[in-house]
Length: 396
Ligand SMILES: [Zn+2]
Image (cartoon, rainbow, N blue to C red; front, side, top):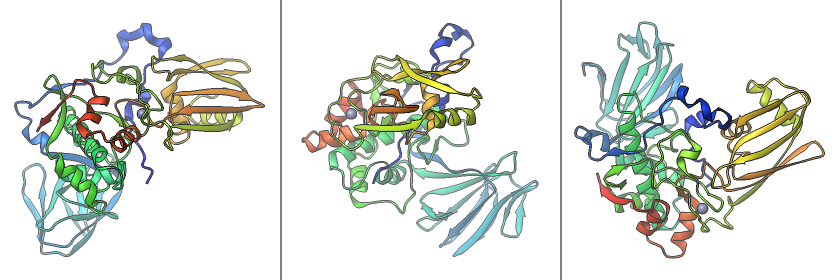
C-alpha cells in the first residue's frame, strides 16, 4: 500500500530566509543527538508512549480479559473486572467518566492480563493511559513495548511484501526514531503521534508475518553516531538527492543527517510527480491560511538549498508581493498534493504547473531507495550505512 509519510509537526517553523538576520529572536535549535545509554534512560529505550487520540471528547474501549484501571498519579486501584468489558469514556469537569461512573482523577491507566485492548476500531498491546485535558477533552496514549511498537509501524509505513533487507533497515530506522523521541520528550505526556506527524502506527491488528520477522531479526538495534542516538528521519522517496536536516528544520546540524545522491528510488512510482492548480485556487488556499491578498498573478520558486529544494516561495499579487517559507506553502497546499519541495513551477494561462521529484521532506532514509537497494542484493547494514554514513548499529 502507499503509506503516508513522516512529516515533522514543526515544518511550520521552517527557516524563513528573509528573517535570517533576526536569529536572535529565534528559538534554540532542536537537539539532534543524545548520549546512549542515558544514566536513567533504560525505561525510555524499552517502552514507547504513542498518542492515539488527542483532544477527543470521548472514546470507546473494549477489553476481553481480566483488567484493572489505576490512577496514574498514585497507582491506586479504581476499578477492576473480569472482562469482557465495554465502556464509553468521557472527560467531565470533576474527573473521567467510565460508562455511568465518574472517577475523580485527571489520568488513569487501563491494563489487562489478556493480549490487547481495543480503543475505537484498533487494538493495542501494552497498556492504555487516558488523561483529561484542561479543555475537558481526552488524550489517549498507548504505552507499549518498543518492539511491539515497531511491529505496528512497519506494515503501515512500508509493506509486508517489500524485500526483507529493506524491512530490516526500516525496523532499525523506526526503532531509532522512536527511542530518540522518547528521550527528547521524556517529560511530556507522550513522545509520538500515530500519524505522519511522527510515524504511522496501526496497533496490533496490522501485524504481518514478514514485518514481524524483520523486527525480530533486528531486535533492540538502533543507530548511533559516535555513541549518540540521533533522529533517524525517513521519507517516501528523495527524488534523486536527500536533504540536509538543518536546511529543512530548525535543528542542530548533524554529520550523518546530510544530503547525498540516491539513484535507487529513480523510476519508482513516487520518483516524479506533476500537479496543476489554477492561480485562483492557490489564492484561495493562501486566503484560508491567513494571507488575504487578492488577484494572484504569478508565483515562483527562486531560493533553493544545496539539494535543490525550494526554501522560499514568492507570490506576486496585483498590488503586493509575499514571500513565504516553502515548507508553509507545502503545508497549505497539502503534503499529498505538493509532494516535495524538490520542484519547479511554471505559470501558463492562469494555471500553476508544478513538476517535482520524490515524496516527503527528503531527510535521511529514502524508503523507496532502500527497497531498490535491497532488490539489488544490499544487506540492511549496507542500506543503513548508505543513508546514515559513519553511523553504528548499537543494541539498546
Ligand atoms: Zn532516493
